[in-house]
Image 1: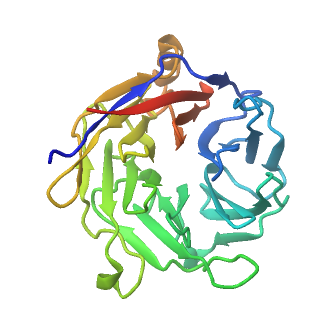
Image 2 (image 1 turned 45 degrees about the horizontal axis):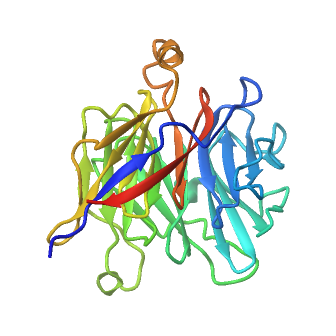
Length: 330
């Protein structure tokens, strides 16, 4: 029986669009909460995280209801963030470029502690330019961070005790020559696939989770990639996100679009298209060129996240745009 493939359709116009308040609010990373009722933004230059709440009509209030961090908080250049929920407890992990991960604790209504309940930092953490962070599905018992300067993804185990704590020493470090300055990472919803946006060599690496029967019950990905996407149209990839059908969305910090790579079942693994099946322009072309002319690594979309049939994409230039999408079997 022929395996189904899916066509990705994204609406032309955004569902919502709201902009930063002031030039200092550089929107770098975006994430939906587990329920989809909260939207978090990492604003690098203000050293803060902004949280937006979904209203009864399904749209997000463009005014943040909570700001974490700030100039005197100790948070240093937050670049990405990730939510996780267990029972009534919601966690928010924030990757800081200085080489640290701050973890905030909240409840399902969106009330978070003003200060982090833990920070993973120091030489033993092996974090360096930690630009991306994500909890590892499906059980979210590990936290992963990509390190741009080291070319690694480090995995930290959640400790089996209360209060919530993660080991500060990585349980596992993933290294591969294809990961050149990884700037963002994402997991498929099942946790089987890990993708990294390789800013330094204009590519994406995709790794498969190894069977626990072969790893003694330990979490492991790789060691070799299941796929490497080296599309010439990739321009300084910044962030990645999987769709529910395991198609892969990649933002290009050096181009005015995000790219979609379709997936299909192969003999043993999923396979992804070598070239983008869709490119979605996200900003006014003149505005993009004005920024990009001065720095070929800037001007394009940066953070990306999906929840249900909604995409959130952000950057310092565009602010936040939310799009509706569909995946149609072909």
